[in-house]
Amino acid sequence: CYNCTIGYWGEICNKQCSNQCDGNVCDNENGGCTQGCHLGWYGDRCDNACSPSCATGRCEKTNGYCSAGCVGNWTGDKCDSKCTIKYQ
Image (cartoon, rainbow, N blue to C red; front, side):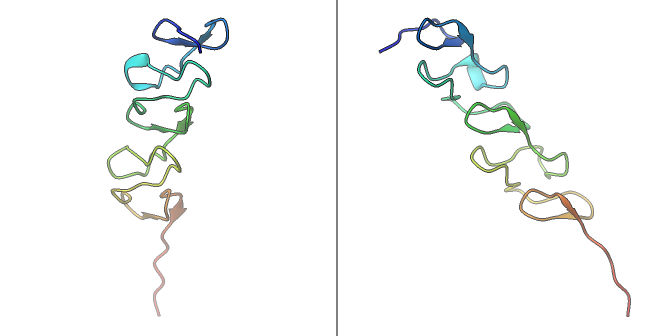
């Protein structure tokens, strides 16, 4: 059982939480962001950037999916595919 100062984690509390963790708070044992990520970031430690094509700039913390949809001509769960218009 570790009791680290806010912003740190690890056996001897010498590892810093990700700068992208909300409130700079993370799990004392694994460094996972316990209060979520800053806007535009996802992953256990909020160390992955959401696609710049996510409509709100926010994506799901677990998988990076753009829950509010995509901007412009972008599509896909992570808004990482460009739509092409085909004329017949």
